[in-house]
Image (tube, rainbow over all chains, first blue to last red; front, side):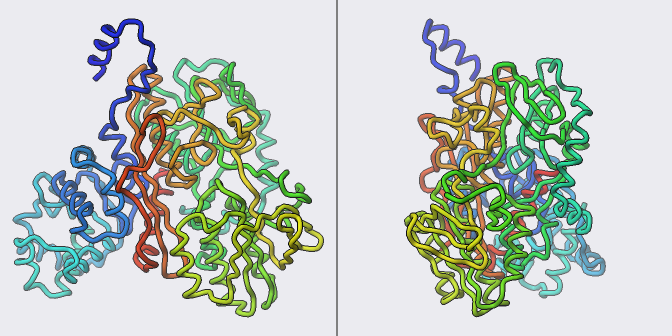
Length: 192
Length: 426
């Protein structure tokens, strides 16, 4: 951009227009920093119902934003915010947050539940939610260290049908009891 | 956030003590008066805007020295202070932050001092602890009051008719007055003509005071004298909530501008003719940018608010000085805490760009704001902002208010507060 500007300035000769008038569009960082008031600096949330976006799967963020925008995924405020961005900008934000350092949280979880959840994760979820839910390289969202109230809220939305589960996930979740699911969430919240 | 309640009460209970301590350290000097090394940004004000500007400049460019000048050693959030008035919060401790982690985590130099003047030509900030030189200055001073427009208002008025529009001792005082008021009493809340800090704030306050009265003093009522022709923000939702929960308690009167007061008789006068008496009077005066911004010549032709280049928040009045937050004229962005947070990042990004002679980065901002109507139900407003023809405008199709009062947003609001205060203090 800078190069293009100087070349243009050269051909334009004596034109003296302030550089501000020709400001580039918002950068990925500019777009993403605006989210940090709620989602924490660089996407590391301080809780309790706001998810961390740091190191999140880029695909997961982009899909979530597009679904908020279309109304397919239920929300209170995110739908109104997502409508403020182009698909290209959503892509830039997804890219920015996916590259931030993993945000480990310290939260109180039930140790017995977390232990049970670890076994359930291994048996049921680990083929997609790799590395105890820490890996967000593909399209599977990072679950590790997300705040428990956020995880519980989303599971409620899944259970009520307000948020649609991916088919592969629905298959695994269906046979699990309420207690099993709760244990799983305690496990994910405890992973650092 | 982790401060003990006792320590906090010590702090806010002793307003005079704080000033005295500041004055005592006045002779200590700042060590920042001579040269800047060409890389110093001074930030005035440690609130929603200033803390974020200071932190983000340091995060983006460690070669820039950042000095944050703030008169207090802590900050009390205005957002959520209405919940203390309503009795939801037992004290202000969860609304209070300190600055030490901005120093340890980001290397922000915090100077506790009163700013007494700005010499824009000389690039110097005058403070109670001596002068501080700067290369660029970010001013985030908040609001001041146009008390001269209310006949009978003097320096003692806020002790009798608190505004509680800057959170801290004023908030504690208003709560104390509400507690002391006998059942059957009348609270008068006077709202000035906009623009003022936090457009939905007075109506959330009305809700919270009504909630307190309903629970503890059911024979009492609150008369709202609003200088504006109607509720300024989230109007339909507030009216719906009031009709549902506070019928007979809230007496809302639009287009009633208070022009005169009598603190002895505890009355206010609407347009010089209609007298209204209150047992508790919460008088929110009309507003402008904080005194320091006015004194420094940063306000525009209206003598109230600070015009800026909206791309960078650089003052239209003084070069190398930026104004953010409530004091600035930021187009469609409201005078809110989240706006100040967002403006601070836009400003920080471009202060760093300007100091490195790089191209200005295009603007993108957000506002989100929650208001409580009852202990369990809240509403929100949100928007995304961009720059169009040099002006900040809402992105078409984005934003709006909640469809209805709801319990989920009362929960989300607490997470909002937790995150934004954590961002400001870590």
